[in-house]
Each structure stands twice: as structure tokens, then as C-alpha cells.
Image (cartoon, rainbow, N blue to C red):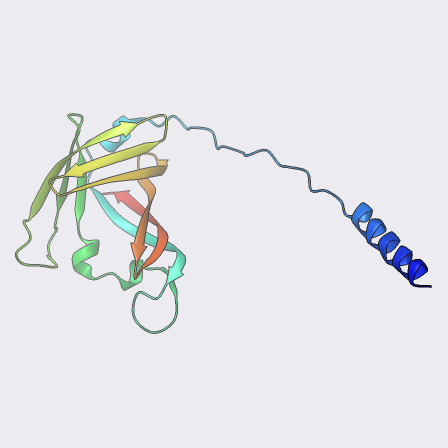
Length: 163
């Protein structure tokens, strides 16, 4: 009787295993590199008009994770102006209000365009950051970059509008 019960259990396990469908491996899809006209960066003043975090993080301390953080930014952060020159110079101007009175009014650095990655790497005296470009047209510059907020790794997506 024990042998018959063992046989039934083994048969049931084999039927179960045979009934499991092996998941087919899916190919990794790499999005195509879009060729942007980098001259669209030049001759414009860019101002931030949107910013989101993914995943959401509680930025304002109300225990509710925030994804759309633009409304939470101080005016001294949203009035900054960014310009790019054909000579590969990027300038950030603090705008009409500064968050820290001791910060310089303007900060100048260099940038390079990596067309194979659709990325801009901006380098300032103490900072270098690579930004993956999602949109670049005559009115919109949208990019994302990895960051850490309150110890949480996030993707920071920022949108700038030409003024």
C-alpha cells in the first residue's frame, strides 16, 4: 500500500512538472538612439518647468511619497536659467532669487554631447553629471539622471522650456 501511495505522489508531481510551461526568454529591447539636432540647445535660455522622481520619495516630510516635485521647489530653484553655447560652455544663472546669498550669480562649466547614448555630460569645478536626453526640440529639453534622495536611489526627470 505504501508503494502504491508513493507511486501516486510521484506520478502527481511528474504531471504537475510536465504541465508547467517553461517561460520563453524574451529578447532585450534596446531603444533606438534618436539623432537630435544639438544646435537646438544654442541661443536659448532654458528654465525648469517640471521635475519628477521615480520612485516617489517623501520630499516635504508629510509621510506621503512625492513624485511630482516641481510644486515643492522653492522659487529660488525654479528661476534659474541655463544656457549652452556652440563652444561647449554651459552656464547656470541663479535668476532673480538665490537660495544661498553666498552662491555666485553664475556658474560656468563645460559640456559634451554623447550622440551614441543621447547624453549630455556637464562638468563644473566640483561636479560632473551625465544626463540622458529624452526630448530635445526648439522649445523643450527633457532629460533624466540617476540620483539619491533621502538614501533612496531614484530617477530624476527634469523638463526645461526655452524662454
